Image 1 (cartoon, rainbow, N blue to C red):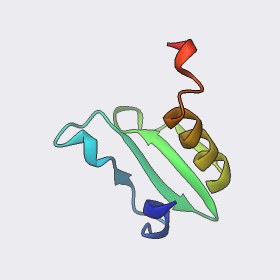
Image 2 (cartoon, rainbow, N blue to C red):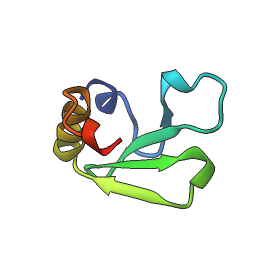
Image 3 (spheres, rainbow, N blue to C red):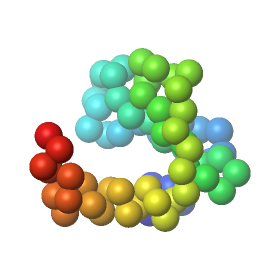
Length: 69
């Protein structure tokens, strides 16, 4: 994952699509995992592997979950 490689262990990265908004998804690398949180719910952190996150993003882009909307 391109943005994962540029992240340091404690730096949260915000989506470039968020602009100046504080309501966005942030992620960082920590101990070989990827952590995700919503900026307005920073106390709730989802941890996953880079492989699982890449598979999820691929599925989203491919429309695999569109029937859930």
